[in-house]
Length: 424
Image (spheres, helix red, strand yellow):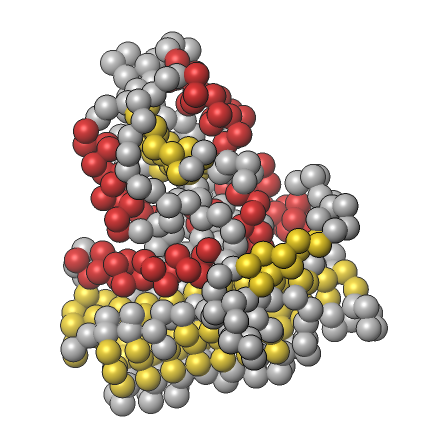
């Protein structure tokens, strides 16, 4: 079984969360969709051009900038008898339930398509040898031209399958989805083995260290290999501490905390994801938020997650024509959505619904929308715009602290992200 995960034309609705990473590599619960699909077979990503170039340049070398593993073989192998291929939308919420549903489709083996509203959520194709058959034509089009070519699936007349699959529609959906799937995501890890329950509700992988005087008030709390939990830490499950992560003494990880690979976390974290290689080692509250990779939240950085009116959080976007659109998230609790490579100054306060673009630097009280590469600390009241080279210098220093070597592909990715809209 081959698996192809594709980004469709609406993936950019997920905003800063996916600007510098494939949607299938966003951590929700304790997994990414790319990781979960690996249970079904080798996975290949079909992503936006700047991300595809980054992955191609790293083939056989270092992991991707967002911490994800390499793709499968460059193309799914063909067979004169047909090689079943599962197409999956990269916006699919990575849940245990969805993994079960996809596995049942694969095991049934019948050609089909599953829709979420008008969008293709998944499809099972039986492509014959290269150049033959309608299924092969659809698959080749998606591989060659990207997820927009998925519309061609309507020409194949696949039977509709009634599985309920949920796609992420807006960037704040990543917070809601994370809350919904974390407990099952941890159960999937625990059921897979490799963890010892060293006290009720605390599951620890070999090579992880949990200090004495750590309080686990309720589980499950899963601590992965190489992680280090300092003394006097309070843990409220469900919570996940990823491989090689470090939790500072006296920290409080509340329900819903997910600390990614090689992160540093301290203070108070609740219902939030920290993607791999990010830092928040000092005091400060992080709640109902999503933090990208290679981001540093300085001491005293806090997020608001509840309006003073106790009403639903609304987001405001500017359209290309200059008009303003309001998005009602329907969430009473919503913190910040922070892109990759972001830095905050000491004592930064992020209001409910703040969105910060990739490689931005913020301080004080940032506005609701901070553009990519904007630097609030340099250039007077209006700030300034950092260059890709400046962002690369900072990233190279951070990577050295994690024992990783920066490559040309990383600089090229930052350059693509800093390019004018449409140039990437």
